[in-house]
Figure 1: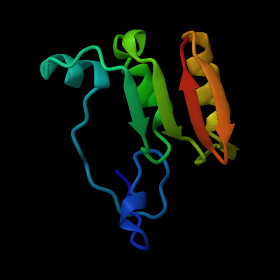
Figure 2: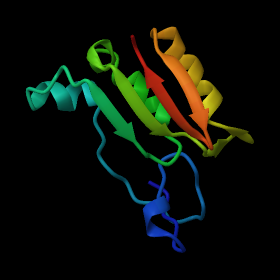
Figure 3: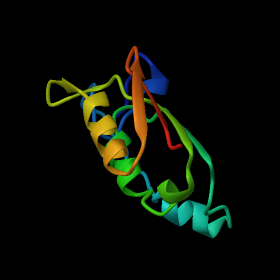
Length: 109
């Protein structure tokens, strides 16, 4: 995880704001939900500083039961905002999406 010395809540696994980093252990939402016996949530809220696609890719089973998602996706990766990729990913999974100031709202009917 890259550390942001100016704003500690902005540490990120994909956006290096400086040279300092630490190694962290991560897991997928599917694994965490399964281990906790909470494998069919109906709502997800994420603010994970640019790693939205990686998190969603690790939530394939969870996304089958989720009805609503709110996801901050205003971060810049490779010179582009992340919200178009997030919307494309979620729409391919059957969600409708709406973007408000970089926040993605997604839902299934």
